[in-house]
Image 1 (cartoon, helix red, strand yellow):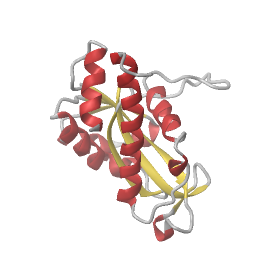
Image 2: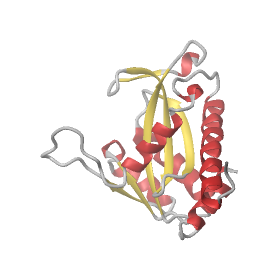
Image 3: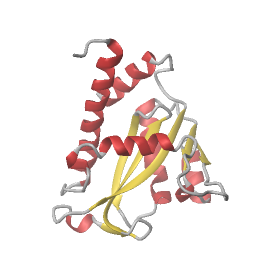
Length: 187
C-alpha cells in the first residue's frame, strides 16, 4: 500500500512513478524492557536501543526500512537496504545520497553490486550552528514525521519486524492524508 501511494503521490507532482535517486540514513530509538536483548549502545548518540535504517526518495516517500541493534554501524547495512530499495522500485534507483557514516570501500561496493552509486553529503568545514544539508534534510523530515506516532518514539516491540511494520503503517497513514489533500477528497 505504501509503495502504491508513493507512486500516486509522485505522479501528482509530475514525477516518474519510480525514483532514480534515494537518500539513506538511520536514527536510534531508545530501548524499553520489551525490546530486550536487541538493544545495543550507540556511542555517537549515547543511547541504548535499536537503529532504524531508512531509505526515502528525494520527495521523502519511504522506499525501504530495516531495524538493527544500535551498536551496529550504518555501513554494515548498505547492501541489505540497497537490495530492499531496488526490490521496491523495480531497480530504478541509480544514486543514493548518504552521510559520512556510510563512507568506505565496502559500502560503496555493496551498493554498486546492486546498481546504486553512493554520494556522500558532507558538512562544510566552516559550520557554525545548525546547517541544512542538501538532500539529507528530506530523510530527517521523515524521521520527524514518524516520531509523531507515539509507538515509534521508542522501541516498544519484541520483534524488529514489528517495529519496521509499524513504520510502514505510520507512513501509509501519512501518505493517505497527503493523497486526500492532493486529490481534493479530504474533509
